[in-house]
Length: 279
Ligand SMILES: [Zn+2]
Image (cartoon, rainbow, N blue to C red):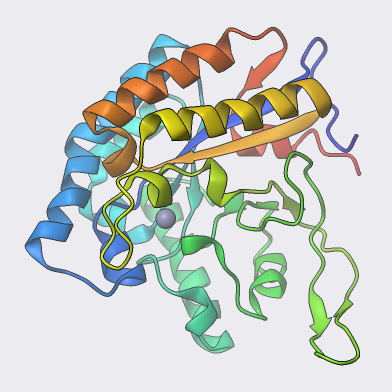
């Protein structure tokens, strides 16, 4: 197994938050009207303290992926996240659509967000999570160039950390080819372990799904990882503006309690998990 977990630990678990606030609507969806932005405001004003209280209750430190736009728009909430011992990782400047950027603009935005973190968080981020979880052809190389230690945006494994490989050629008839594994450590995400597409009311595909369905899915994923992938990693993503709604939050409280009730679960930050990688 590529992770050397601490003695007595069976599964690394990240119950992380993507604190997108306003810029999710602006960057990914191209919307900046007051109604949508108020949903981001709810995430900041209600969601963040609600999540911080829950994490404190269970003594959980975790990783918050925060775009620069949120660092600037909601500095008080970001300061509270840091004060309570959590990690802040890079998550774009304004939740930009990374696959649509040319390499020069992508490099400029990466340099800008590192400078923003140094100025506003007080440290360089160890890790990166791409907004909306997709790369351009240049992203992997740029993350290496900027010295990131880990990424958490790809889905080439489910419960194993791995070194992602660039896809060097794409050919419909001859097949595709991979390059050499990256020095970056990938801590894989999954759309099935994300509250946003399952529970939100989205402009083009209103989900507003059942929290019972989401709980059952998350529990099955956790049970599978805990039972069958010892030494693995389970990465859940919640959004303050989504998970803090009453019905969703009560489901999340049940899920946190369920996970924390298992022996050998190591609830911690993505950087601490990445530091145990030895593959
Ligand atoms: Zn996001």
